[in-house]
Amino acid sequence: MSWSFRPVLALVAGLLALAAVPASAFELTQSYTISPQTLAGPSDTALNGVPFSLSVDVDQFDPALGALTSVVVDFDMDYLLEGTTTTGGSLSGSVGGTLYWDSQAFGGGGNGIGGGGGPGPLLLPFEVAGVAGGPSFNTAWAIGTGTSLLEYTGTANVTPTGFEGNTLGLAAGTFEVTYTYVPEPSTVLLLVGGLGAVAFAARRR
Image (cartoon, rainbow, N blue to C red; front, side, top):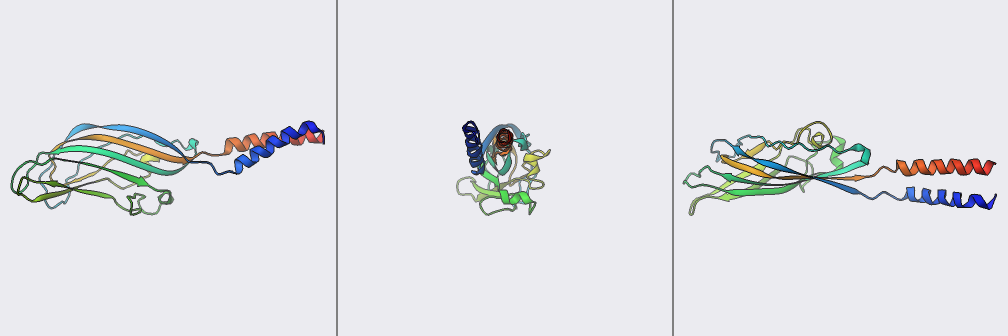
């Protein structure tokens, strides 16, 4: 074998070793603003739910970037409750939290929504105190499930669909989506294959 082929073969061996190393995860974060809007609904101390819709159009994950392993949703929503408790007086408060979809949910089992306790419907509870001496007014904010993963990788919109409690006021906030993915090693493998073919052809000469 001529010594001139050794650098090429060494480069091929190095690229093969590089391709064998697991790819590191990358993150892509997108931020959105939820515009202020009026929420109208009757007082509902039984927490049966007064529906409204806050829609956020989220850019889908580009599968050409690699294999998606998780989707993390961070939201921070402030609202003003202008209803009254049974003893009178106005209410106000804020809510925020984190939702996530883990890679195990991508297989289609369940609705793919998780919040610390694993896949399943997620409800974020909090309390808003009434007037002095009055009772606590429990309320909760929920996000719709449905085809939850398609909301980020398909054609659906992300739509929080439930606000339970006394709902007459304003709501606004921010919405942030972080995709974690592993880049496809196809580019490196194509380069390795091409250099390997060149080295093989040169050796046959």
